[in-house]
Image 1 (cartoon, rainbow over the protein chains, first blue to last red):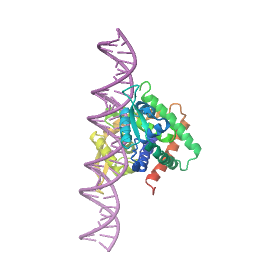
Image 2: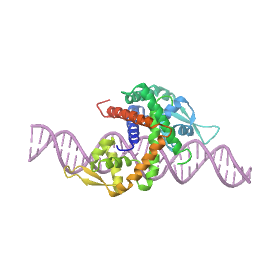
Image 3: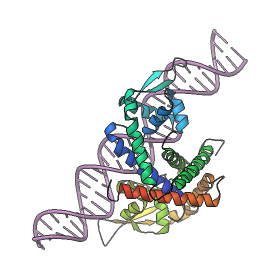
Image 4: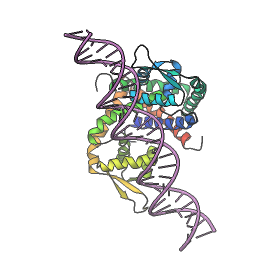
Amino acid sequence: MPDFPLGRWISLLYRYGQIYISRELEPYRIGRGQYLFLLVLYQRDGLLQEELSCYLNIDKGTTARAIDRLEEAGYVRRVQNSEDLRSNRVYLTPQAEEVKPVLFSVLKKWTEILSQGLTPEEMETAQQLLSRMSENAFKHIHGEGK
Amino acid sequence: MPDFPLGRWISLLYRYGQIYISRELEPYRIGRGQYLFLLVLYQRDGLLQEELSCYLNIDKGTTARAIDRLEEAGYVRRVQNSEDLRSNRVYLTPQAEEVKPVLFSVLKKWTEILSQGLTPEEMETAQQLLSRMSENAFKHIHGEGK
DNA sequence: CCTTTTTAGTTGCGTATGCAACCATTAACG
DNA sequence: CGTTAATGGTTGCATACGCAACTAAAAAGG
């Protein structure tokens, strides 16, 4: 790749990560587009869809459909927010607590695969740098304009 | 995000990069799923679809459709390979040469956006680490396996 | 040679994703 | 208050992607 090596690696890591997650979580009916929402809800249950979208920086339409899936598979339930009837709070079900260790172990294993031959310090550095680049990306796409 | 921060940043960088590329290249009818193929062809023209797939590690079905798009938009043409009638060689058109500077400048700008606040050494490190993680991902998904 | 297997490419299907249009509810304002 | 604007959520549409089934051509093996 002559130019733009970064984009190529990011594309590969994203796509291959999705393949891995899909395969491993398929028996649990958790799709690659859904697991991130579970991760956020494990941290803080009962968020609004809008809060999930905002936190993960994912389109609200995409979020709506991901929550559809999770609800249909029995991992979350929507409860209309009594303080604002337009919005839903999303709560984990006991079934979600049950798969939590599975999900964490799958993600941990993928991280281990990626980190083969890298030192913990290098992994830490990678996270640091990706996080800073993400913030730049975010600010450019949203933050004042263009 | 409690665990799996890496996946989250990669997801964000991938999706936001796609948004940026889509917007910038939309006037030229080059989609976010197509520009990588052009980049490879700028390096070496006349590759087989299979070689493109293999080099970018992208599914051959996806490749076929990306080349469809590029052909329809006038950037490449398929020529049946006389040495193996099953395969096509993909050649750039003059129109592809014309957009080359535009494409490169768009990608360069995105890299500059991502690298704000990072030193050139840090960017170099990031590429290094991503490249090594990509190789790990590749080996796990393909290489013997799993 | 003829049959079997492999391989390059195409296509159908399922999923994910962003955008824009839309709906219902809430907030802002005159 | 009543009208207008903003906002949370849903849905239609377009694109991208992997997988699997399929086709046609080439390679392998008897």
